Length: 173
Image (cartoon, rainbow, N blue to C red):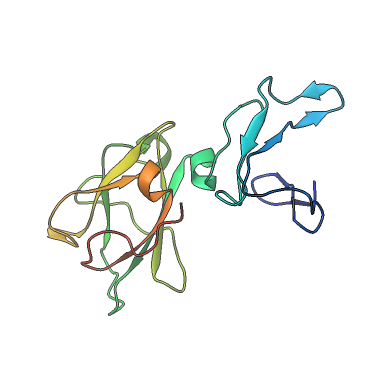
């Protein structure tokens, strides 16, 4: 391990340290302590396609997103005029209300933080969810007229939205 963060330990595999590795090809690996393997299955990823991965002890899955490993999505939302008061998410399919609490139309899920882009919503999702169905709204005013669906396989677990603009400015796949 080269470092520790809030998720766990970090291993860095760089071209400098391993100049003979071809990062465009699958990199097979085993996490082990002595002769004890973390999982029976060997694991693999292609560094050029997925430069960062997350692993959970005892699980064979190789997660491409921290959100996938930790069951959350991050939605960055920008309102150019900065008028965020009352804006929140109404969610259904994929939302983990046991973790995030009940969400009703009158009491939407509010931002959990802020960054240079705008407000940030870190939304808990149920294990193995394929996506998150939601509406960004302020009372009866919807940001977009139709229901939205964040497809994790297509868009990833972190996206950037601009007020009244369909789609995402930048998914982090």
